Length: 159
Image (tube, one colour):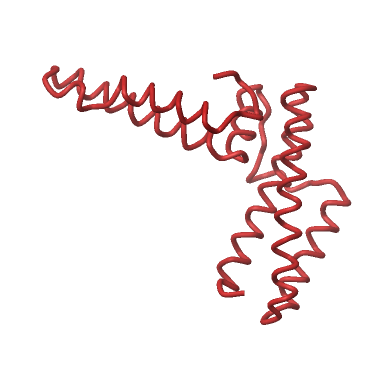
């Protein structure tokens, strides 16, 4: 598989199935305990790699980290001013909406549109420009959007 953000999902799954079949522990049932243990470790690695590459946000994060970008997700909370303002608007919408299904649906739509826009921007930054530092900033913004979407889903599951 190429080291790209914009991956073909079917090609990714096919590559994973090929690797998973090669290292599946059942293929090593008659092998020594050490060989079985190594096969299990490789199978776990293949599954974890597939899990990360299948998720666009995790894939973008991985590509940035592989390029040496420290995302500082725990310690660096600085973001673009316009995005911070948008963040506050979304939070206020969620807090004010409470039981207003229309507003909650609109917020979900806005968050999904933000996700799609971030995917487009990250495809450009990672695959075309190879600007991993700028991509890292966009990844951190996307992480916020995902967190807010999860909070919205937990706080208002039926809306």
